[in-house]
Length: 560
Image 1: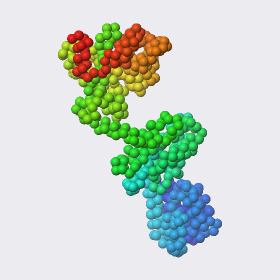
Image 2: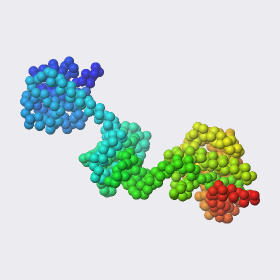
Image 3: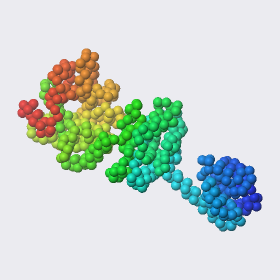
Image 4: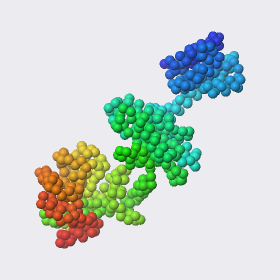
């Protein structure tokens, strides 16, 4: 199509009269290019192929006849999309079949009927453009493979139409793709994606498809294959794609075998893809394994995750979540000086479920913020009851998720709860983990300042694990430093004791109290006391207690 919107037609005909006649029929509606033989026509098509909408082709010509021309065009990918209408002096069936085999789209018979020629040219161009539009809509513009939506739709259709056939849905992940974009440039990254699509497509058989489902993620549906076959394909992709990138780029694949059971086949293709991705996640950091397979253990994990998400709303409404308190004892007096609030899920069928089972799921689906608010309120309710009973109150620390700090009204909600239940702000301590403040340090810092303005105290939890560093103590105003039990357990050598001495002395210099977690022996208690640690929580004093048991514990220890 030119700037005026007119399509271009190429007429290849050795007879001058026939060529001019076709030109006269079409020139009012189209730009017309002419060639006297197949060779000249091929040169014109090669030069202007991006704007030629159709070719009218005679068969019997010198230099290069119509059959030879079609062979050349169909073997050239950049030209093969152009429709060809053959002009013939007879309508012999054998001739038509041979032309169709060579790639002809339609025929017009000599002598020409102007109306027939125009309509056939119009119809063929419109059909080709509609087909091209569908191709654009269905395919990823960069790689040419199916786009995400069309891949999933076709995968489900293929599996639905072959209920007795086992399939594998495979996902690929390009580890180091970001490195390629940043170091070699986006063009090189795009080339890597295109090549990945081509390599996968080249290995597919009949009825097997590939699509790009994310930035550097591809998925393909194949008839069920052995583990060895999938591992070999993964090895081929790595050999073909990594090239000069070396170990910086690595292809990992995850395989989900659909099976033939109704439960498995009722899954959406997107859900199957998630399972293949889960197989990739399992092997992501394994040096010698690049192909992972979704198995029964992963299936059980998913079933448990579904159970958790299906039941979490009802559990919150029915108050199946219970607050347990682990006492903190001051080392100077030995008396309870606080407690940490811990959540336990008491399910009517499964019984008590510990937080390690469901908290990661709640973190992922962000239900954690609602559970945290539930915990804040129930702690305030308990503190109010104990206050009315005349039990001396001790501060209670509550773990905060990083998602809590993303709530714009987080601090105001806490403030409202303390006013609602008549609780002093300093009785609520907010525990912040290192992972929370490293995710968004500016947001956390602003939130800590707001908490302090309202009178809440903030504790840094699990210091001594992961990437704990002294910069966090300087950059954020924490009131309490909680020493991880892993740090406490490493008190066997003078070097380890010196590290603990140093951490506690830094905390004292910054006017921070220190709480040691996980103390279990009298020896650990004495060591921590000698080094100036403020408080201790751990099984030496008490395991986590239910609200009523902690209430009784306070009465006993406070001699009430």
